[in-house]
Image 1 (spheres, helix red, strand yellow):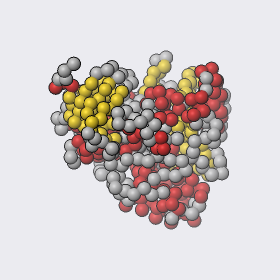
Image 2 (cartoon, rainbow, N blue to C red):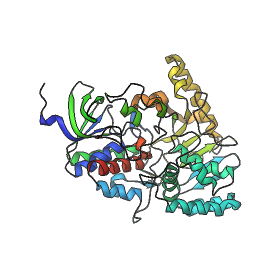
Image 3 (cartoon, rainbow, N blue to C red):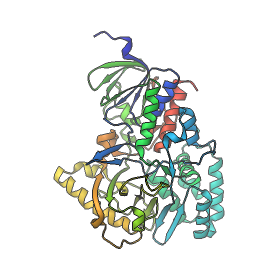
Image 4 (cartoon, one colour):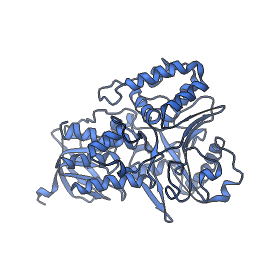
Length: 472
């Protein structure tokens, strides 16, 4: 069948997650003919939502990082709003109350004011405070987003300032859970990104959760005339002379583009290319995946004495961030209370929400038969909840008595809805910071370009669109 001009685009973006939507907006602002392709029926990618029995559940969004109040300039949030020409009200962000890093015998709380966290460290680790301040100063001056930063061990750099292994673990605990694709360590530029995101700036959430952010992005993209096709993915990237020559879509149709931006991951993208083998990139498939449980309660967390916004907990003597041998590692994880942001009485989730996230073993979950899979979900739901309750004020009534709904997703769920190999939330351990691939018109943005989280994903989409498609 003859190809027409309507089959050709300036840029095709694979994936309607945060990075893909941000890239699409940026390109459409400059009159590029851009098409976003999304295999699933909902945008958002790793940060989306779903409905069960009339309730809407966020996926991925514990909080949006890098929150700063109005008037603060030069931060990632401000850059996103400026580059996409959005207003602060479009995201409708509300700051956290306080969050906590909890290990046996020691708690550190942090707010959206760094001075609070600094005082907490000074009180709990007085002999370490000078080193901590030097570390904070080093990070503050560090150009973490530079695309030519060398790959440096964060453990090595932090060890030059912090000599107490307990404090070191307490710093790595939240930063790894929020942005490390590597077992046991982080790339220092990523550590610096996350340190600034959590401790220098902070957490926020819209009253409607992730839907508010997705709606702001999709409305902006639509208003600029960008095209989007849902429930339609890319089956193959056909290569000729070192370039993507055409894209074969799931429905059998063919389109062409001057350039292609892929948000689906470095290895996943390479395996779409007709000039590669099915196992290409096996040494760079991520190993870190998660389970998450959601408990809906008839009482809000504050009514139960649970006032934290987010709790990062570790029950071991040392924090161990690695794929567990068992289906789940309940000894460390993240507790999130989406109700505990600065909402008015009428805002926020209408019921209590109690979310738990922990490391999981993708291969073990994948090997289970369906009946064993359901049984394992039930078993680990309870085990993870019991582990996390050790780090919360004791309830005066059984949690089961006020539970009105539950749900749980596993590494299998992550792969089913994102396409990430091995259910790897943070993608490949080796990132492509400049977004370049082996093909001259195919580029990466999102998780495997190296910027993680909602804020990082949007920045990645913007920066890669600017660099490779707009020449900025």
